[in-house]
Each structure stands twice: as C-alpha cells, then as structure tokens.
Image (cartoon, rainbow, N blue to C red; front, side, top):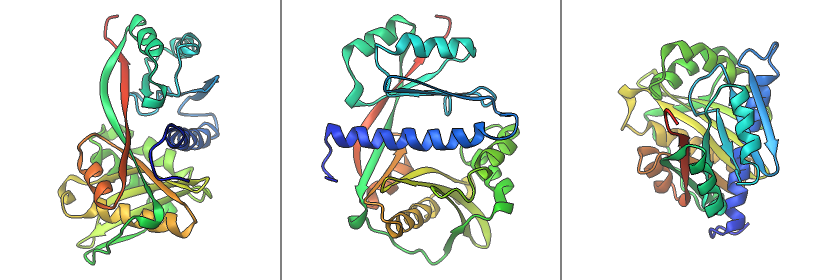
Amino acid sequence: MSSVVTKELAIILEDSEIEAMESRLTAIRNMEGNPMDVMIEKAGGTAAFSVKNIPGPTYNTVRGASAETLDDILRFYEEREISPRFEVTPAQSLPELFRSLSARGFSQSGFHTVLYGEAKILSTRPVSEISVRPLEASEFDLFGDIYTKGFGMPEFLKQPVAQNNLVLHGHEDWRFYLASMDGKAAGIGVLFMKKRIGTMAASAVLPEFRNRGVHRALLDARIDEAKQHGCSIIAGQASFGSGSQRNMERAGMKIAYTKALWEQVAGV
C-alpha cells in the first residue's frame, strides 16, 4: 500500500474507521437486551451509527454520507429522536452533499484530523518511568474512570463506558492498555487491528499526568503491537492541533486529511 495520500488511501482509512465503529457497536448491541439501544443503519455506502442511551455525537454519527442517501439516513435518526453528526472527508466532499445538509438545517461545527503512517518507518521510544501493559478484564472499572475523567465526561457514564469496552476484551481485533507512572494508573489506550491497518481507537490520560509522556508511551506501545501483528499502516484521529496530534506526528505519522464535522443548528 502506498504511503502517499491518494483518494484511494483516504477511502481505505475511512473504511477502517467505519469497521472499528461497527465492530465496537455490534458487540455492544449483542449484549443481553441491547441495554444501550444500539442500532446501525446502512444505505448505499453510508453507515449511520446510533447509541440512544449514550448522549452526544461520539456514537451518533454518520460516515460515508452522500446526497442520495441523506433523506433515508435522516429518517432513521428522526425515528430515534436523535440529531446526528456527519463526518465528511475530502474524498466525499461534493457540493451536492453540503447543499443538502445545509438545506436540512445542518452547518459545519468543526474539524477533525485523521493521521496515518507506514508502520515500518514509525519510531517508538521507551520511557523508563512509564510502564504500559495489557489491561486485565478485572480492570475495566478503572478504564471507565480514566476514560471519563480524561475526556471530561459526566461521572454517570463511567459504568456504561466500562461495560461497553469490557465486551470487547478478548476479541481478536481489539487490544486495551493501561499506562502507569509513579506506581499510579495514569492513562488508557485502545487498538483495533484489521486488514493490516492498526487503528489508534482511543486514548485518555488523567489530567494530573498530562504533559509527562503518558500519551506518547501509550501510542508507542500500540504501534509496536500493530507492527508485531503485521499491520502495514497505522491510523488515528485527533482534534486539530491537539497534543494527541503532535505526539502522532512526532512518532512519524502524517496528516492524511481533515474531516468536516456537520451538526444540526439548534431550533432549525
């Protein structure tokens, strides 16, 4: 696979994100009674994800949208009384889609960076004062605590986050990591591997341990694991200009593209 950004590579990277989301939400949906009320809808090349009992845009998101599928996808969310977020890549950015979104009350709300790198040329650097190891099945309450505090989420989501990740523990495509510093739990990281692409699925660091190398240590551990499992491409996402983006670039990853985020205007 070429490491030069092309439309083909952009589509491959977006497909890997869709596969990771679908794998995660399918496992959650298959929990007894579907307690999070997960639904996945596909129309053409569009994938619409919905988790009704977890508010916000993280899981209530649309990938691969097109003007042709827009009305079908919006009906799906209207029936669930949810307003979704559309994540639009440059490879999909046709004027017809933007006009259609705008006509239906959506506007651009932000950007999100997608990064990638050829696994064999990415660098890692062991940091002696930070240890990173696989997360044990008994430690997902700790995972939920770090995740919610790291992302500034409400405390009541701690248990759902723990349960929704525990269901993936032991899955052949998923890996979970715990970073410790000064003998204390400091951060968590998640890796998804499929079709020789290693996706940095999530990472969170407790506020008191930020800017001390924990995020980079978690990134390095996941890159090394992906290499060992034969991944040729490493991919990840970050808020534009964030510390996460800087760490990925320091490891040798490059910006593939920046997504446009579209959300519904309140009151429209």
